[in-house]
Image (cartoon, rainbow, N blue to C red; front, side):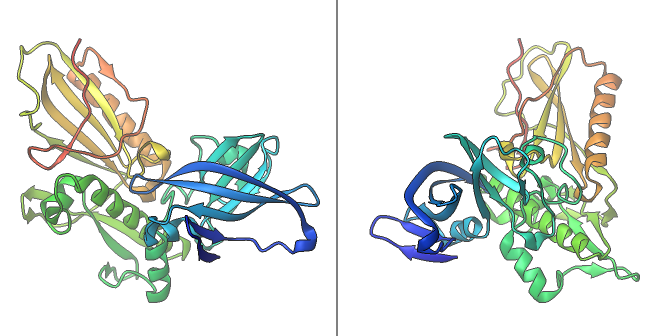
Length: 347
């Protein structure tokens, strides 16, 4: 891949097709790619048609203001273009695709992550991703390369059997100390999402290398005060008293609930890190429950979290429960700086 600076844009050149093989036809496809961290990048995909009739991605045109980090994220992806009727085309793991113009443009993870290839038809489904991609849906390329160079995370501990033990912070634990405490309320959603992506990248690296790895939860007892780390099973449950300055306390009415799905990639990927249940009495929140899922447990953690949430709604006798139709990016309360949920007004 070569980066060329033109007068009005940057070009990432991927394919140098011999002149003798190229039909002079060029086709451009303008699209928007959402990168981890909720960064939207407008890309013009320039495709050349070979004399065989096949379209090949030749270069990507980006705005000159595109950051180096974004360029790296985009440049490491494999870009494909093929007729929309070819649902059986095998690709690397798809992180984004666009369908139109009679074609599909797909951006895929490279082979270095060892996640194999599947047909586009399977990759385009919103669920059913195989293990170990459930561990990390879109790895951080910079951290992955560091792990390859160093041979692991130097700051973590190892058990006697050689298994790596990586600490896990919930949002509250992360925000109360370390990096999260140094960020503003506005910066925390993206900061925690980046933390989870790096965590998942490290877990995937250990899994793919065949090395033992497990998570330990760093429990938060009070701001700045942590308990001993505890091994993370399939899920970890937090119970919180809601911060309510943003919501006027009204007449306490029947109990009802709202379930949220939170993911470090938001609605752009079928990845859920946490399922929450907000218990309401009328229009007053009285309890928040956050169920954090162990990425190493894959689908079984999601199933366990859902069973727990359903069990809580029955135990509390909630008369009505609103279930989500989307995965939210993390939300932060502007008053307390901790994670908050999305709750509609009571009807």
